[in-house]
Amino acid sequence: MARPALPAKRPASAGAKSSAAAKQGKTRAGRRRGGGGDTLMLAVSGGAVLFLGIMALPVCILLLAGMAPTIVAYIVDQTPRRTLTLTVGPLNLTGTAPYCLQLWFGADTLHALGAYLTDVYIWLVMYLAAAIGWLLHLGMPLIVRLILEQSIERRKNKLLQIQKRLRAEWGDGVDGTGDTARRES
Image (cartoon, rainbow, N blue to C red; front, side):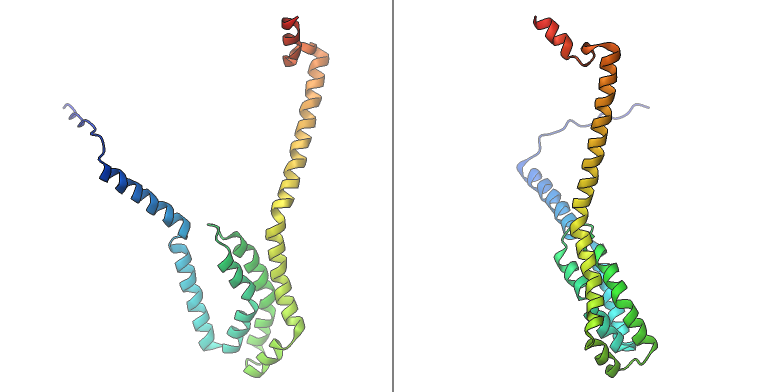
């Protein structure tokens, strides 16, 4: 059975071009916005905070106060992968979790929460852990650049050694510079 012939392509009208451009703009805007993953994460986080607020209000308040740097990092971070949030958040949670657990398994009262919130060393530990996350995020590109520069320099030196060995074995014409000098003269 023979295949039917494809219809000839007609030039697109101006309206078709603008609708195609509009569709392309919508997909690009959708990528920039972050999509449904952020919405789902915010809904789950909101539900967890609501549940924790009902079940253990002092722990919830301490957790929200201690995780403020992560909340700020989430608001500030506009990259698609949210690398700042993913760096600051776990370290900030590491600094906040011991005190939340002490409050959870100890006296879970607002009076105990007041004692935790007035202790400067608790604030120092929670926010210092978050500061380490911020420093990691800000310093890592510099560290990676230095490592890559050293790697490139080692590779360059290795190739120069190979080039010297080839010149010694095959002569100066092996890299092409000797041939052009002979041709010009």
